[in-house]
Image 1 (cartoon, helix red, strand yellow):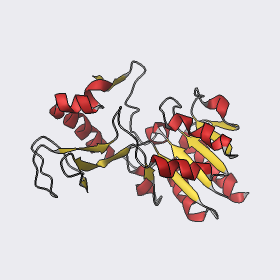
Image 2 (cartoon, rainbow, N blue to C red; image 1 turned 90 degrees about the horizontal axis):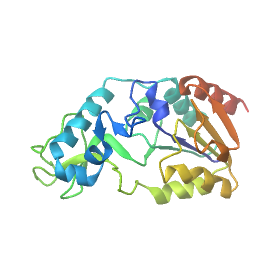
Image 3 (cartoon, rainbow, N blue to C red; image 1 turned 180 degrees about the horizontal axis):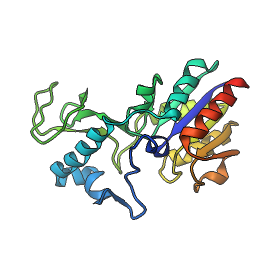
Image 4 (cartoon, rainbow, N blue to C red; image 1 turned 60 degrees about the horizontal axis):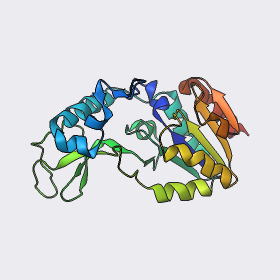
Length: 230
């Protein structure tokens, strides 16, 4: 059986990574337009770098929680095909042991050169003075993340995997951000059974066949045990 799992901010919140976009639409006191768009980066690269530098240093201080560990365990023991897609830009799935994670919104611990396109590991602060080690350019690096107005990564691969899924599970996702919010409809149209695991109901909840409510660190390990036992 082909299993496709989509994870969102709710799975990492219990590791201490805040859901940065608040109910007021601000990201830690900043307008989304200022820190999460290409235009914002062109206007004030230093502010954007500072915003992501803080997120990067915070990420390096946290650890995977039981939900991340349970999904890594599932990947090791699932007898069929398992595809793990995340909207998160952290590396907690990898640190928990999950292989081949598809990061549709990029990765915070990587930088990308706006001149030559080179992507490289990045665990330190970025600034306009940072140097691209591939082309030697200065003031050309940006976080390797997808900003509003940009196309998510590997959408073609993601859609193919969902179309072949027998079970599609969304964990800790808000159901508000497209194209990910439309994945459940794609899965159902292709005959997959669908499951939502979330702390609270979302606007997408009515689209799922089954819903499990509660903290991801509790519900995901329980679901994984039941799935493997069955």
